[in-house]
Length: 444
Image (cartoon, rainbow, N blue to C red; front, side, top):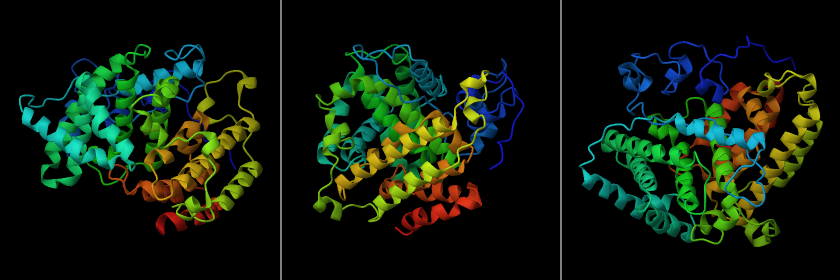
C-alpha cells in the first residue's frame, strides 16, 4: 500500500474548514463553506453569505439557512467527582470546542417566519404528540417519554419547544408533499431558534438545573442530523461516507457533553431513552428464545470472529496518519500498535452493539446501532474519510446493522447508499470483504 498523497501545509484557512478537517482554499468566502451553506469567517464586510446568495437558494427547495451536520469531538473519560465539567484532558476540551463549533455553524440570524401564525405551531405540536413521537422509538415506555416528558420539559425551556416543533415540521414535510416547502421552512426556523439558545446554554458547564432539557434537545439534534437529506431537499446523502463521519462526530460530541449525567439519568423519567438501547454488561447474554427472533444474520458471530482476525493480521502502515500531520516531534507519531488499538476498540463496540440488537429480538432501536459511534477515534474517522481499506471494511459490516433500522423515515435507505459508496471507493484487493455485507444489505 503506497503512502498517502501529501499536500501543501498551511496554518491559514477558516475555522470552519479546520473544524471539519478540510483543506481551505482561503477564498472570500471559501469554497467549502459556500458548498455547505455555512457562515464563513472569510466573508468580507459587504459580501453576501451563502444564506444570502440567490444562487445558493435556487439550488435547493430547502432554505440555505438550514443547519448542516459538522464534526464534533471525541468520546472522553469522565472525571470523577464533578459531573458538570470536562477536566483538563485536552481531548475533552477539544471535544467540547468541536461541538460548540458545530453549533456555531448554524446561522446566528433566525430565518424569517410569520410568528403570528400561532395556529401553525399548534398544528405542529398536535402532529408531534400524536404522530411523530411514535416514529422515534419502538418501546411504549420510550414513546411515553417522547410524547409526554419532552413536551413537559419544553413548557419551561423555549429552546426545547423549538426543537419539538422543528422535528414535527420535518416529519410533516415527508408525509405531505404539497406542504413540503412550508414545512421545511418552519422546521429550519424552529431549529435555528432552538440552536441559538442551546448554543449559549452549553457554552458554560451543564449543571443539575439544566442537564435534563439539554439531554432532551441533544436527543432531538441526533434525529435532525440523521434526516439531513430530507431537510436539504435531497433524495440521498451527497457524500455518504463523509456525511456519516460527520454524524459519528456529532454523536460523540453530544455524548461528551451528556456522559457525566447518564448515571443520574437512569433515576429520572428520561431513563427509558437510555434503558431501551444501552443495557448493563451483566445483561448482555441473549437467551435462546431471543436469538431465534433476532433480526441479525444468523452467522454474525462467525463474521465477527473473521473481522477480529482481519484486524489482527492487517499491516497497518508505519507512516504519519492524516489526522496527525501537524505533529512536529517524530516520537509523537502513532505507532502501528496505536492504529491497531483504535480498530480493536471499534470492533469491541461493534460486537457490543450486536449483543444489544440480539437481545432486542425484533424490536431494534436506532440508538442500538448508532452507539457504535462512541468508540470511533479521530484517527479511525480520518481513515474513513481517506477511504482506508481496513476502516471501510468495518464500516461495510456496520451497514448490516444499520439496514435493520433504516426503514425509519429519518434515515431511510442510508445503509444502501453508504455501502454503494464503499464499493466504489475501496481498494479492489479488499472487495471480497464486501460480499457478506452486500448480501445482507441488498438482500433484505
